[in-house]
Image (cartoon, rainbow, N blue to C red; front, side, top):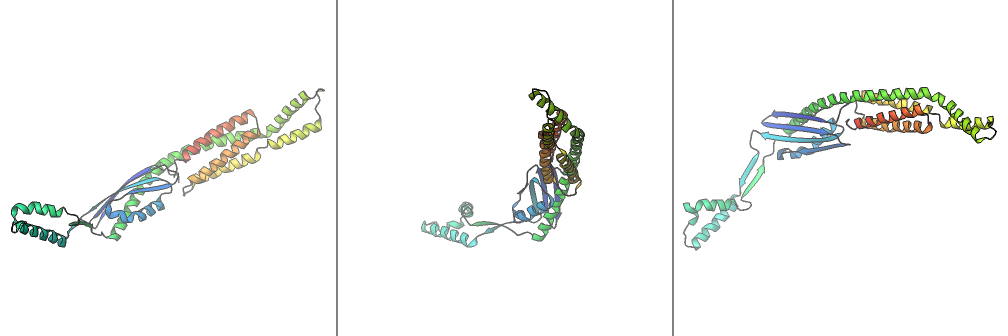
Length: 299
């Protein structure tokens, strides 16, 4: 089944006081490149999320942006009481030395003093309560799968469109190949006549040595024989169609087959100067290049 690399999916899952949202975007890329945007409570799951995505997606640049909410506040702020008492003790001592009695307890000074103490480093410490790891892991798997499933629906729709276009272009190449195979048997005879004419021009008497002509024609016929190239090209076309019908993604194999198809078509063009065959060769090259462009969009 063909799938494009372009896809979009969203998901939202909720359980046991946790809510996770996900937005997934996938675009073309030569390999699989996964990037994540994770809130603090989910950072520990980065590797497992990437592993899950790799299990579900073969190729493309995949971006996942997560959101997280918890019914209970996971953020905690703690007061360093020994340090606060030390600051207050120092304040009382200074107030006594300045003759202010217990200035620390004065209503006028309490507010500014409290703000000054809280602003000191390490007086307040921030921490995050550990969430239920197993619950979050299960929710993340569910969330990723939902988003990937939705993206895959979009990829498969576009893949069907691409597949129809690939099929049409393969038909055009097959038509040109059939025409080449039809013309190929007459190529040696045409070469023989052309060679006879050239040799006659070089021969003052206007007569051509039959033995020499036979030798030259045999060599030329061997060089211009394109049977093997046509057979291999036909085989490549069949393998390409088989990849299109396969349940597994075969974009890389398709790319390799297109290279081989281009090689065979080039050889056919170089072996014969027949005008009609040259026309079909150019037509096949054009379609192979269009196939290559389309395959680059497949996962």
